[in-house]
Length: 482
Ligand SMILES: Cc1cc2nc3c(=O)[nH]c(=O)nc-3n(C[C@H](O)[C@H](O)[C@H](O)COP(=O)(O)OP(=O)(O)OC[C@H]3O[C@@H](n4cnc5c(N)ncnc54)[C@H](O)[C@@H]3O)c2cc1C
Image 1 (spheres, protein in one colour):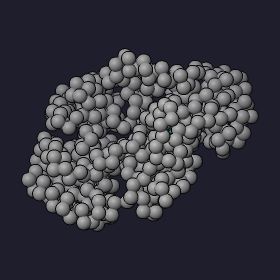
Image 2 (image 1 turned 90 degrees about the vertical axis):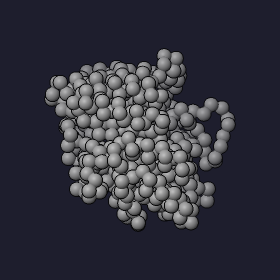
Image 3 (image 1 turned 180 degrees about the vertical axis):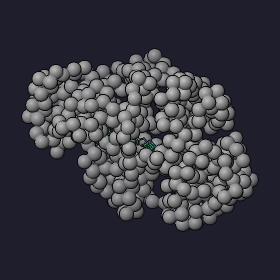
Image 4 (image 1 turned 90 degrees about the horizontal axis):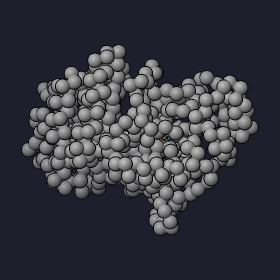
């Protein structure tokens, strides 16, 4: 697209400067920092815009349409798929500074700007007795704009659902620069197409979110966390099924296979169970009123006696939080097994999970690579981390085959290729495995209708991108634990 010569580029820069004034940054440091996300795939933009007001965004988008300049919106930059990396250069619209959080305690709603971090939204509303359940492990870094654009999930999906289930309204800009509002401070609407829901999960390709109204729940009075260890992965995954069959309705059921346990323990210098090294665990949490938890705790303890080898209960909120901290560090902890990670977040129906894990063992035997796997077992969303050394040609070849086999397998099992990270760049080669031609054509049609000049986050979702041809950059991100 925009292959500027230095003269054209500086002419364009002047026009951008006239449009948004001091909100535009052209220096190398700012451009480099906006060039990559959690995938570490880096493409240098020509400018970064940190808008001071909505008029800046509108003027920037109008100019981008006139000059066919790509625009990539950026929140916390924690995407793991390259969705926030500005593949085609152009301008990065950085909304991470728009952080206002305005609680409507009477209605149980919160009005947020797109750069508000999830952890900050949670703590603000909790101080008013309310609860925002979506809980991605990246909550300290990721923003609500990014969570909406990726329809982020997290650990509490089993009981509460994902970001989409809490978005009442969105406001912002169409790619063309027109201001729109989808919904408001009310709980339902039926006036025309629901484009709010199209924006959710569109990975910044259909609109720029500048504000959102989120629905809240009353904060659960109590929670109770149980860590349990199992003979092997089959027993742990069968345990998930039997736990769900009790209808105890856990808020979280996290599975860590024995390789993930090993990495998480080493990264945090802790041991889950003294005499049960090399075994998988389940982290289970239930929440509700104190009275309600008495009965439900009994059900879970009975289940654990039947299926688990040993258990540990978190007796206080801080003990519980310590267990979750270990779980949140899983993602970065894998790097001791290889310098490169293919981080997949596949989804498998409950009834096929044991078969899926058997396949993973076979995949690791065949490829000679480690693929520690952990994730949200109650909603079948597993993070499979294929670890390899990118300097080693044979390992790279094996990793490439392994990911292809993985994607084909999950779809064959009735699942899908991504549950929460989205397609971005990294998953584009696999979209045709999960979606048929008509489905992809319908999605492309929507993109064309809303973004006729193709300026917003071009190259994402649909265009085949080969990560093998792009060396990730060497940067240390806040969530890397090496
Ligand atoms: C350690 C770690 C743990 C993670 N755990 C989870 C997890 O448990 N669950 C989960 O779902 N994800 C997880 N992720 C992935 C990531 O945090 C999510 O995808 C998150 O939603 C990205 O938010 P962000 O603010 O960082 O967005 P960015 O990375 O900045 O952007 C992501 C996408 O959103 C678009 N976007 C951002 N802001 C806007 C806006 N205002 N308007 C329109 N589009 C916008 C961007 O263009 C891009 O396409 C994890 C990542 C890391 C590094």
